[in-house]
Length: 251
Ligand code: SF4
Image 1 (cartoon, rainbow, N blue to C red):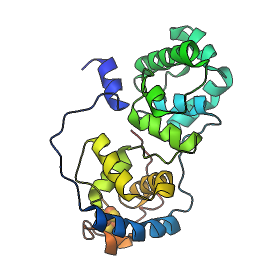
Image 2: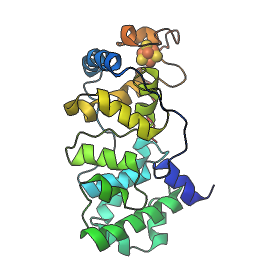
Image 3: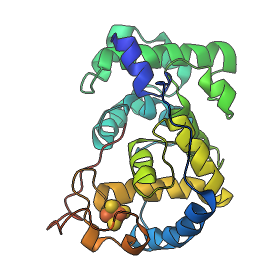
Image 4: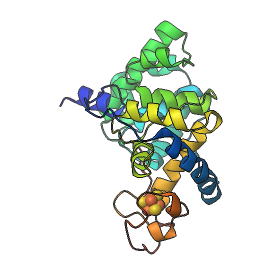
């Protein structure tokens, strides 16, 4: 797979073919989710997007850098990057080798630098340097997939979208909110059962629950606050120190 194809897949631009068609029973899932949400809220009141940003352009750049990379590393890089570049035009006119050096600590830095460069050139040419506030225009930008677009719309434009990242995908399947594995189908299943005003919050809560308690390989079921509402309440024995030693990953 070329680096361009790999980045397109990582950022959700490319959709892998899947055969899933059936989903869970929506009414049962919606009723269970309604009970799960307040419990997650109580357990993770600090849940939020862990990328640092102050405006739509900064979040867009951070999300491109965050593909298959840790949020804390992205934040380290953007702390300096955002001081150097304060507009899409500045990114677009910076020589590519310079941009590559500025983000050199991140994985796939050459591909990501090219994505940032191309994306910002499109912002300048087609949107007067502004990050669009609608899905169709966002998806027309190079390096921007559905996950990135939805996270942007939800977190900077106040739209109740669902960005299907690793944690949202994995926990939605584990909690039987969906039987699908294709991100677009998962998004559709979740849009049908998550209350309209709680969709962005739902994503933040699943991300924190996935990092702190319901880890991919060793979920801490005995300490889980939604255990009675989970279809898999006995996956593991207790893990000492799980809450304090969570590792934060985004894809
Ligand atoms: S009970 Fe276990 S599998 Fe279910 S959500 Fe909690 S930690 Fe995850």
